[in-house]
Image (tube, rainbow, N blue to C red):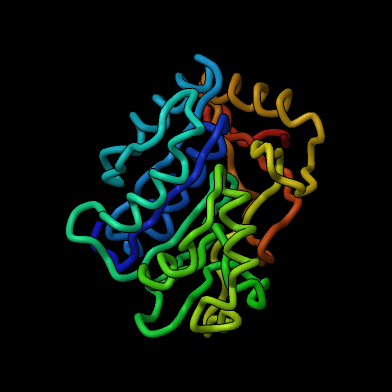
Length: 247
């Protein structure tokens, strides 16, 4: 890892989607990040097994720092604040949040060092996001002063509510094609009001994890230009190597 951005990934009960994000970083954004920290939660032993598989395949290659724990919510805010105030390694001036249903689908390239940046398509009027925007570390620390949050949804909501604290009002549209999309296949945050493709999110997550543990891997449909969030049916790369069916 030799990039200019420290990333914090939030993931809960979605090892299959998380592994797709990690794979997409390796394919399209490995040079972006100076460090990647994963703040994770798993509510069952099956999800813990799934995360162990993802870590086995990508942990060393991406130099992942592992934070959080199987059943803990209480540490979420303190872990985020600790990561902001005490970055791993040498620390980068720039920081970014990612969630486990994000996917890079084309080469990302490094962000400019002098302005906020988004790897997503659209949503540039939404100045604070946990989906791939890049900020100066100090700006995020000032933004979050005096607020309490227990999950990524509340973190993003307070960031939007207090956006007047940021030294900018919108994210400049990038001068190259976007490279990151969020896919609301299912919802995991208790605070989230976002609509998902599968209302029975718990059942959908269990099905994804079962196939993932069996050796199948999710794939993003190729050749797309996407907005910030897209209702895309992910494909499966089966253990035998053939792509078949959707989710």
